[in-house]
Image (cartoon, helix red, strand yellow):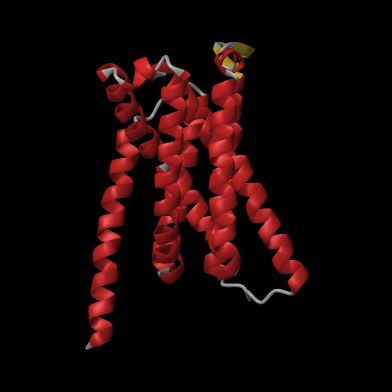
Length: 239
């Protein structure tokens, strides 16, 4: 441990891996921010805390199971010329889940149903949100940790990078969730991002890799345009 603290290579690996984990965590932050909007504000914060705590727990657990995790990349099913590992199957299932969930939420936003719920219904909605966050945490954690294994050799560096990234995700999730809740058009844009991310996960599962840089550039560009739209609407409302 002392050797790691005094090693420039270890610090460089930590900084690089932390930055990568934060970038990979953007998908998770967007998903959690959109999903918690389905529950009352007082429950949304607790849902974010539980969701991100589980994200951290899944990542550390998977890092502790390195041998098993590496085995997930070995082919278990072959269909014609395509072979699929457990990682591929999980990515495909997670991507389809994201697409289905985002599409359902888009339909719900367009139809604008009555949001009044009884106490029992609100509790069911909260538990449903936690379950959905758990499922998608597993998918995002798997891809994140496999990337970490490929970039660093020391378990301590990987765990430190994951913990720092999750703290940054927690700090960012609150403002992002509030912004999404306050601006309906932004929520629709975030849901569209989830569809895009889901398609990318399914494509990865079928061995067709879409560079994440393209996806994050599209997200950043669209978010910038929406930011200026929000400013324009705010300025018009003052007139």
